[in-house]
Length: 343
Ligand SMILES: Nc1ncnc2c1ncn2[C@@H]1O[C@H](COP(=O)(O)OP(=O)(O)OP(=O)(O)O)[C@@H](O)[C@H]1O
Image 1: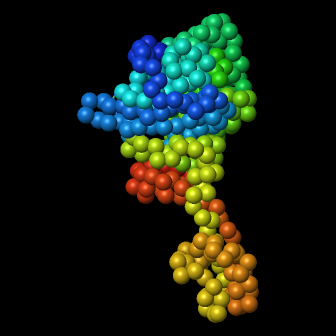
Image 2 (image 1 turned 180 degrees about the horizontal axis):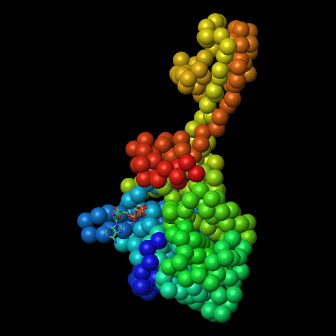
Image 3 (image 1 turned 180 degrees about the vertical axis):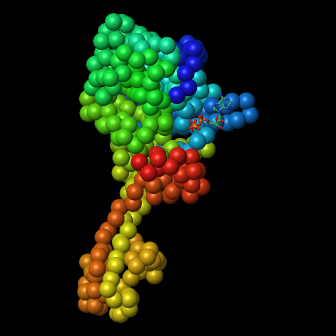
């Protein structure tokens, strides 16, 4: 945990650039979305960080922004929040095109973590709430209750500098939620947490969504998005080649058959598609156009001796490779520390 004299949260609030006065030049489809962004572009000097991002986040969704380091996730989130203005494009949160006006309805955990080291944990939570309009006394009371509920009751009298990195990160997360925002935006919230705390955070995100809160988080670990998200935006090289439902992304790839047989050869082999490949002892192939029943008949009548046969839907990782390419998927793997991939 990086601790700075000036909290990262405060920095983000104080450094918000004034909103552009330009009217929205592209119409939005509906006000039923928590977030709508169209054609967002951001340059930093020579670097074109974000090259035209379109996405819509349904109210109540758990929405993942999925991409490798440097893909443009943080820049996109900061534009959506109004911390920086886009060079081109428009965005709205709850129909409002000046996000600062509804800052109290939003909770934001920045990628750069930071709390005042000398503050006691409940005071740090209350301080963060006060930046979003919550009276300090109420924030402190809620902070203690939240810490107890989250299993940090033993640390309510401790200062931030006395906490472990993971505990301090959790306190900052609770400070992001203390004013009970309708929309929560978490930038790489799983980074720096061990497997147990990653599991607890997954539970918290599910609970927030069950209570009607819209949650957006960025990650470079597909596993977290697959386990949690109803919708994702896949971002690579500053562009979003896919934004929408996880189920639809997975259905872009045909289901695969995995077949193991006792017998190696026989008439049944003619029933396998020419594209079938081996994975150890198993044959792997797409469900044939003729369907699974004729294949089953040929396997039984051809005396294959079926040991196991399963039809597996494509996972989000396979969909990611198809959409963003093997290089982006490989970059995700090399970005992720071992414990995060294994979690
Ligand atoms: N303030 C800045 N000045 C100059 N370049 C920047 C700035 N912020 C981001 N960039 C560049 O923009 C690109 C996108 O960065 P961004 O932080 O949005 O990516 P990211 O997907 O969030 O990656 P990470 O998870 O590593 O933060 C990168 O090439 C980055 O170096």
